[in-house]
Length: 449
Image (cartoon, rainbow, N blue to C red):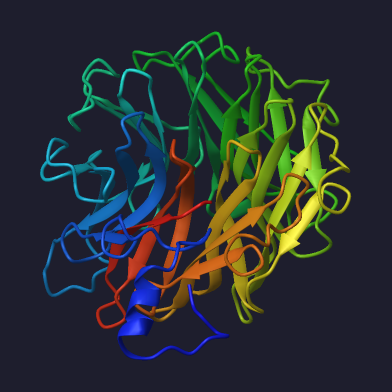
């Protein structure tokens, strides 16, 4: 918080700044170092992709870490594994979890990454992502791991705590996971062949609590959905209270570059014909590639999707935070934003939302990256927006509803967001060291009120 209209000097200034009340959107000084925490595994390349807050206030982050093969190799090279980290409520690593608060899991391949995670009511942790090899002709599969509350693999899940699914493509990845009220585990992502972009489809699997595929779901526990013959990829899943399953991402249809795409399945895995057109919905933001990366269910049956619109990386990065709110039947909710849609820019570069959370008062928090550019060492900051229930920016938060946070001056990216019981906002992702290009898992906590 900065004082622009009053200049103070000496001890009086110090006292004034110390006593200045925290404002919504400010970093929480009681968390980590002035509101920020970074965690390194082997001083190489670690990323936080998903985060959840336990009922006791501990914070769990899942993503990836790279184990050293040759110490002289660049930080991005090595054996990638699932990574899970747990923090105490103050941001300190939790020594009761794994080794010093950290766990990594190898599926036996050289490229393994957890994209999402979910907490079971019994304290167990489910992480979902991909496992495969980067060599020529390599094959990637859905990968799911379940951990006990202490970070050890839960051997009651699929025998050793790990499960993989091959959907038949050479590039299958689970990008999101959710839990049904009966404890079954639903994972969603995509399946396709790297040599044929149009072959990519939404891919969904449902597991029983013991890690076996649930054969009551689409006959064998898995289902693939194509929108209109083009490339479709799912990045978010949510289980509705009535047992129906929402899966969202980017779908190729009327816009050949990709639109927001949402599918709803019945509990048996069949498409829900009462939703959209034959169970599918397209939403175009007016040109360019659009993608949903997060979903949030509202108590009234409507739901919000967040991601990016007009996304481009090369040669000129561009894009904006994009949100849409849908009625239970899949139609856009005209009471939200402009005819159901909202776009928010931080910069003229690539801005994109990856995480979404709802406050108890209904306000909406979207977290992602502002001004992303990855190569060579990249740039970008954590970006956070708070919206009113109707989709307008909340001017009481940050600067006209928006906040950015830099870690070390290079590429920083917020991947997920959650709300604590006391209302504080926790955001997780990764931060890059500009001198070495190595990355750490990064977590920030903000004041909400």
